[in-house]
Image (cartoon, rainbow, N blue to C red; front, side, top):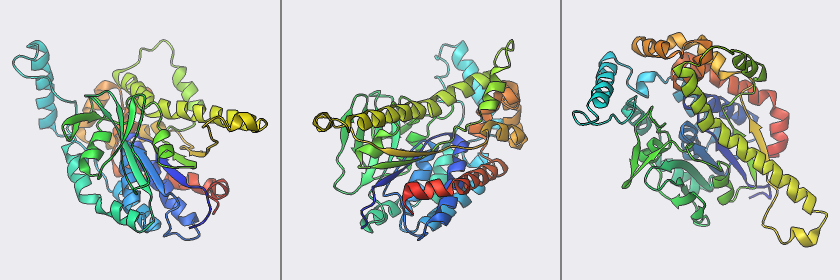
Length: 381
């Protein structure tokens, strides 16, 4: 083992946007001196990022092969592999909502969600190799992998982790770390977007998407021993596009625009806030270095972080591919305003179609190569 700092890979959530992370992992495998060696002993993910995290952890004994496999899965995904877009389902769902509301829930109980993602469970069961996680740990290629879900019963943000015996469970305000043998139930829990997908059960508790109430998305990796953080987000940095969206004054937001705004708040804001907190702590630690007697009295430590975000607006890409939605789903999305530019944020999360996902994969691949020198220095390649 080398004396290099322990680097954790953190993959944020974001529905179909997470295809970007697959491209980033594929490009990263090309930069490694030894493409089979996993550079991230600790891997942490949330929502769709947790799916990517588990895939990379299960294949940690051969990083390039795991990255290639993950990219291939994303390139072949279709909406019907994730949720039911059929006319029969939507007719039943709209009828269910209507009867439930008009009868006060007495004739027909409240529906669990707007979309049925039971197809996702079948997909994950067929493509995920959960047994590879323990194999990677025993081989020394992985120290731990973690995913986070939000518990409806306790109101806690629960991180399920599988790792070596040196890692202990933790408990902080509104967040805990629990040792588990990860499986499909855990992935369904962390990706259960409220209202869109139904809650998922793990044991005797019900959970929703891990990004909900996740106040400190960087903390699981730090609890598991990370000394540096390599973060792959899905937020994008197109400030000009954000300004154009803000410039639509006088036009009331569509339902899709409102819901897209909420999803951005869930998936993007907590990570940005936690990064700001980390930068402030790093600055405080640097100031304390001039006062050794004070520095020895604080548990704070400096943690370097590298953040990779899309260099282009993912919602603009989604807007160009919005016609790829299946016919009935396209009709629903049009009615909600999700196929217009100002509502394409929602489409960017739900458009699980090859053309869109492949463009995100290509973008992730390109963004890594464009920053290969900085990434190489950060990972000490």
